[in-house]
Image 1 (tube, rainbow, N blue to C red):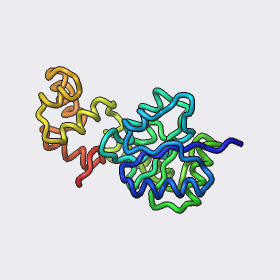
Image 2 (image 1 turned 135 degrees about the vertical axis):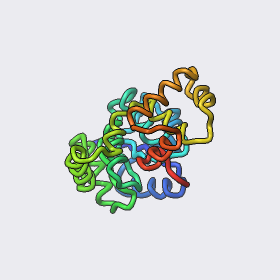
Image 3 (image 1 turned 120 degrees about the vertical axis):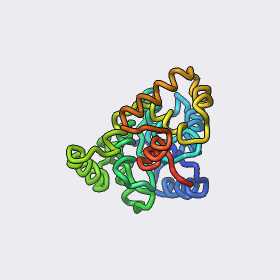
Image 4 (image 1 turned 45 degrees about the vertical axis):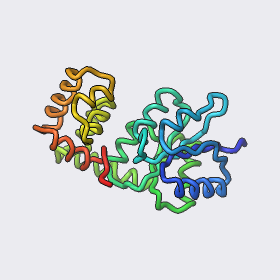
Length: 218
């Protein structure tokens, strides 16, 4: 059996280097190490693709959500296993929606990481107790509460990108330039989010983004 090839995407260099050593000790080949999605994309070789990307979520550049969605579209045979410090159901469900085949915490034991990698390779998915528990909670609570998780599921990638930029100090005009869209289109995104999220102003958008893990407070 060929050695399973692993790519690591994590912007914390020391953690990533330690992670690379652990992955190697578990018997896998570390094919690539990257600090964000943009670097991962630039390093991918069609003739030598990784079997699995161990994907952090919160990266300074192209984050785990965007990168996972990109991989699902362009390299669907490359599987993503999310490895994150976040254990909230919003992050878990969003990563699974983006195409991740499993989700484990950075504090997991090496044996759990190995089990997750092997499950993704042999079964196509890894459902840990964490994931199944959060999914069940979300399913049961979705009908009872008008919660942020359900609202997040209704947003498309461009709306999420706008929401992330709207949480910065950029003006709407600057956001339009960043997204290569017209100011009128940006106004349309803003008004659509106001309606979808039942929010009346930009401050409300920022609070929603922070609460649901679209942006993190440093």
